[in-house]
Each structure stands twice: as structure tokens, then as C-alpha cells.
Length: 93
Figure 1 (cartoon, rainbow, N blue to C red):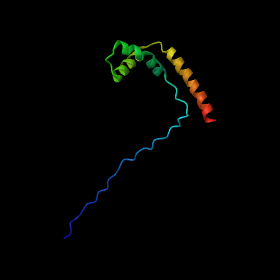
Figure 2: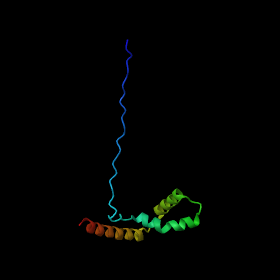
Figure 3: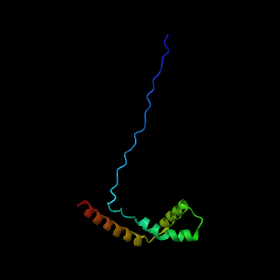
Figure 4: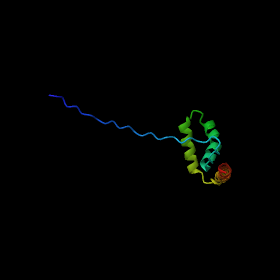
């Protein structure tokens, strides 16, 4: 008698093809939070030199949530968004 063999089909997960970025494309605009983080990161590190990247990010997030006057950073973000839109219009032509 012949032995029965079982064939199995192995499935592999499809890999997503990464879209190639154009190095000449304008940089995306920063959000109000990113302007805030850029502004406050040095002060947090000065107060807490032992903080790592995640600790700094947590402190920045908590500080951003407590901040009531975000208008300064929102104006900077709006200005940066306008810069980006103008640069993209020029880039697409």
C-alpha cells in the first residue's frame, strides 16, 4: 500500500510596495503641536536631563494638553501651511 501524503499550501503575507518620494518635493507643513514641541523640548530636557525620548514626548503631550493659549503655535502652523501650499503649487507646475 502506498502511504498517503498531505500537501499543504503555505500562504505568505503580501508586502506593500513603498511609494518612492521625490527628493525635490516640498517638505510637509508642521502642526501647531510640532511647533510647540520644537519650542519647549530644550526646556524640558534642561529641567530633566535624565529623560529619554519617550519621557520627553510624554511630558510635551501633557504640557500641550494643559496649554490654553495655543494661538501662537496655530498661527505659525497656518503660516507654514500657506508656505507649503504655495510651494506645492509651484512644484506641480
